Length: 300
Image (cartoon, rainbow, N blue to C red; front, side):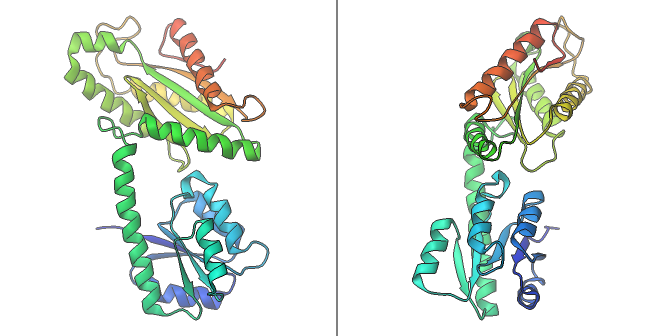
C-alpha cells in the first residue's frame, strides 16, 4: 500500500492550521508547525513532500522561512505554497522570486487548496523522476559523480556560511582489477552493486550523500558530523563490506572483498576555499590507507 504524501502546514494561528488540516487529512499525512524555527526543524529532520506556508508570522515570516529552507540541501526541492492574505502582484512576485511555487489567498477555498496541492505534488513526482535519470548511477543505484559534484559545491557554500565542518569519505574496493581479471566483468558488476548497497545502507541522515565516484570508487559526504563519529562510521563500512563475504581469491589483503577509506574534514573558508581541496585530502588519505596494507581507513 502506497504511503500518503506528507504535507507540512506552517501557520502561527491554530484555527488556520486546523482548517487546512481538515481539508487535507483524508488524503495526506498532515504535519503542523506553529513557527518558522519549528518548521525548519521538522523539515530538516524529515523533509515533507510539500509545504503550505503562511506569509505573515511573528518573529520569522514566510519569506525568511523559505530562504532558510532553500539553504538546506534536503529541503531545496520541496515545493512551497504560500498562504497569504495579501494577494497583490508585488507580494506574489516577491514570493515567486524567493522560490515559492504558488499562492493561495485567504480566506482559503477548500477545492482550490486540494487542487493546488495535488497539482504540485504531481509536478514534483515527475520532476523527481526526471532528476533521478540524470543523477543516479544505473549499476549501483547510488548518486552519480555529476550529482555529487553539484551537491558538494552547494554543501561547501552552506557550511562556509555557518562555519560548520564538512567531511568526506573516499572509498576504494581493494584490488578490484584483480577481482575483475579473475572472476570476469559480470561478476565485477555484481560485486560493485553489492558493495554499493552495503555502503549506502550504513547511512540514515537525509542530508548525507553516498555516491559512486567512478569505477570501484565511492564517496560519502557528511555535513555537520564530528570526526569521532565519522571514524566509527568508517570502521562500520569496512566491517559491512567484509561481512558480505564475497570471495576474492587473488587479493593479497584478505580472502574476501574489502575496502580502504580516506577521510578528510574541513571547515570551508577556514581550512580551504575550494571544495576540491576536501576531495584531494581524502584521496591522499586513501592512498596512505592503501599503502599501509588496505582494508583500513586513514584520516591523516
